[in-house]
Amino acid sequence: MTLPPHIADALPALPIALPLLTAALLAALRSHLSRALMDGLAMLAAACSVADCALLMMSSHEHTIVYWFGNWGPRGSTVLGITFVIDPVSAGLTLLCSVLTLLALFFSWNHTDSGGNHLQPLMLVFLAGMSGFSLTGDLFNMFVWFELMSTAAFALTGLKTGEPAPLQGAFNFAVTNTVGAFMVLTGIAFLYAVTGALNIAQIGLALTHRHDPLVLFACALITCGFFTKAAVVPFHFWLADAHAVSPTPVCVLFSGVMVELGLYAVQRLYAVIFIPAVDENAAVLRHILIVFGVLTAMLGALMCYAEHHVKRLLAFSTISHAGLMLVALSIQGPLATAGFLTYLLSHAFVKAALFFVSGILLHLYRTASEPVLFGKARNQFIPAALWFLGGLGLAGFPWFATMLGDAMTSNAAEAVDMRWVSYVFLASGLLTAGAVFRVGLHTFLGWGSEPISDSAAKVDEEPDSPENARTRWFQLAAPALCVAAAIGLTLMPHFREEMLSAANRMWVQSGYLSAVYRNTTIPLPTPHSGDLEVKSAATHGAIASLLALLLALTSVFRGRLARWLRAGAFLEGPLYFLRAVQTGQIGDYVTWMTIGVAVMGAAFVFLLR
Image 1: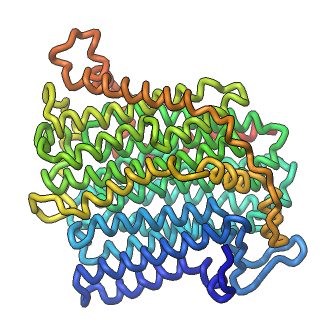
Image 2: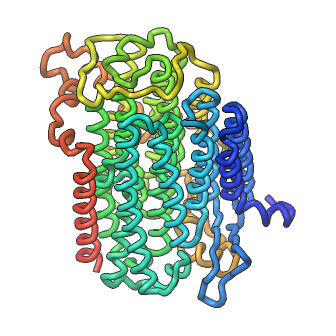
Image 3: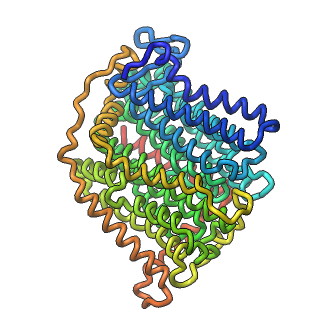
């Protein structure tokens, strides 16, 4: 798609400039503007960002857009200027951020407590941070956008400043993510010491086939820092605490895009910088990362099923699916990258839909506790349908794009003799969907025994909205659109081919270097998707959905079943150690992060040399 030069030149900066300028305006006038006008202006800015990002994605389809701020382009191999590198992946992620921000603002329209009209400008600052993080081609500026995103997120988590729980959640979020940011910054400093560069392309060019201990430790630090944002075990503890106390629109962005952006950063930096530098040890790197991915997927899934606070349950589901996405990117290669991106996209919409429905329940019944919600939503037919559809999406049921991401990842795993990867997807989908189904059967149908209660389920959460016992149409429209998107992606013509083409351009280092240094896009053969085996993934998704329902039923009807049939009730109870480490104490969380850095650093330095 070709645009007029004066329009094309302005497009790359608008996803950041427009939200920031609107946020500044709203922050300055918030005490003088009505709530409806604040919401309307914020949604208008997000909608304009959606349109701009869509144009950027279409424009970058054939040619990567490289935008040099101040026209400070490279001189030889030296890069001094700051650049945005816009390909279909970075533009698509920015579009996803804008769409979910627009839906989150739409859901909260004149309804969710805005904290004295602070919600709207903070959401736009958060959008600008996520957009800059996705588009930047400079490693230090990636850290800057990381910090802007985190700062807005801290404030959004603690928006209800009159309550102790949001402040505690925001404090845990702030400290853990600041520690993660220091890891990233220290890793950047090491890379700068070795290469004298901050531009991602220049660092990748300088480090080709060079992996001395300093470079490897820098890689480990940067990985751990972004793993904190992505809530990868053991850097994950902040996520459930933050989700339990954040307003629903904020949870949508946390689980829908912020976590995924941490993994996107790892994938981008590995493709351009680190995997070429450790070329002969790429298989070892794959195994190191996949251990963290499997551990995250399974621990998150177990904790998800054991939870009885709905928002914490969904947060642990996000941790589990972040592990699946890490498994996908660990396998390496265009097909695995396409699987990672497809799963990321579908999971974002599915999880957003589930959080929207949880927000509806919190609004109607003033609680997110599964035991308190028991049987209260029997007449909520549309939220019930959306909730169960979201559960099917988590399980990778056929027609959901999560199934297609599973298929791509499993096919890539088979090529490197890791056929067991598909069973990790099956187990995670079974447990997380089972937890969602259990909540649905208890809440919307009122079936079986009263839910098990625990300390987390007794959290007295202040609802996001004023008391008003009715569901408004825009509250239902937001999750319905998300579910429709998660299904509709698989029906788009040539969707697989487009994802494979975008993943291939992201994966090939020479293509990225050529775009930055010569402003040319190397023609790359698109991996053929005609032989992609989706039947196995569809079968796994259907089996996972069925088993998830059966598992949920063993919890719901535990009082009528023999002891040996109460599999679900067993998984809800005795995870004492896993529950014990989720203490809510920031010192404990930082200790686990330190252990994670030590393990990751030792693995990189001693196994990749």
